[in-house]
Length: 511
Image 1 (tube, one colour):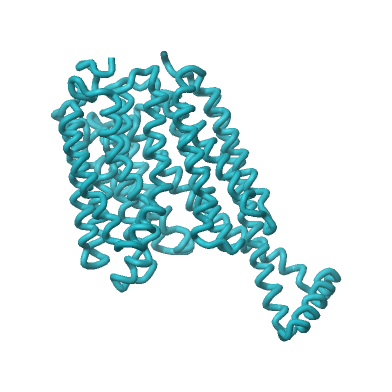
Image 2: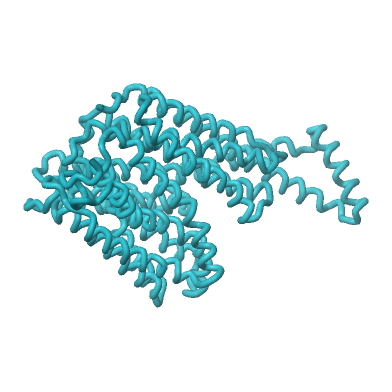
């Protein structure tokens, strides 16, 4: 059946595995490029004589343009024909990668990163929809295991690959390396992929208002999430302005799209309760994932004194656990009710972040590794059955539109999770510091006794006793930060657990 010429999304004689390779190759490099620049930022900043705040625009520019294009992928596929749009996206991504590597100034790099985000934005949802079409419904678990491995491997491989390339070659090669892969992908897509009848180019009126509001709303929202904590949120007039623009634009977008004959994004898909529930669950799954994997390395580096290498070693085994779990869960999801697997996945993810909320400053290496491994297993249990359930009632001709919205919520969940976690840690650290300071008083017997002991130790080592106050304050800040991390992990765990009733409302996938 895999080579049947009538199977949608592929040319006659092309196997489903060849289709999987063809669509996952460009998708993987696109996902890697969302994080590969992070570790090279210092090198980019140094070579272009830019400040750190200016250099981070090389990351933000890509994320903003990517976020705008993702929900438009279904509409663009209908407008251009899906195969033509896919090949065009890979071409834009490849050419802009060359331009990023050749950038002569920070401004030119930011502009080319915007182009790269535009080219890469449609790759993930279009690839996912083609995979679901190429594999029969009973093998959708296997298809999503392939997709999930790429989606999970990218954020793991990106920083490691970027660091190695930057240290051994140059930061420019993190972009140049995309060029041969992009050329191979274009050739494979031209040979292997064919449009089914319902994804051919369609003549339709362009919804200019929808396009403008979508770009303005999602672009502003992504900017706020990316820069909010650094600018102190609503204390910054810039963040307030962009927040208002995002809110007004998105409200007007919803109104416009509901009454448009040819909407840029199909909001009517959310009438399907399982799809609406699934996108909500996906938002919180990636909220949980990204908030925890961002906080964990910060915790071990800033509070435990780990090097960047050892922080990477804490995260690495969790990624491997996901890669190992994905194929197993993919096979299992076709035989067991995916709702049961998803329920187990949500519980495991919630348990994992609860385990992280039990961290303390005496924890050893494996105390940090095992929760990350468990989270990797939880992601494997969650991602595949959630995707199967969410998209199970969507007709083939609407699949690309559905995967566009699904992946938008996935990305937004990660962005909101990072913004929430970093803000919560900063706020709770201030709270705990103010509370702990209350005990540093001559009227607190425990503090007086501890200070006298510390002074004796300092004097015995030949250090001035006056240095004791500085040491106590540094330890107080460390303790306050530890408590802030603990609070944040606990809140994220409770939020993950709260989504469980929504999982139970989802309908089982159609056979």
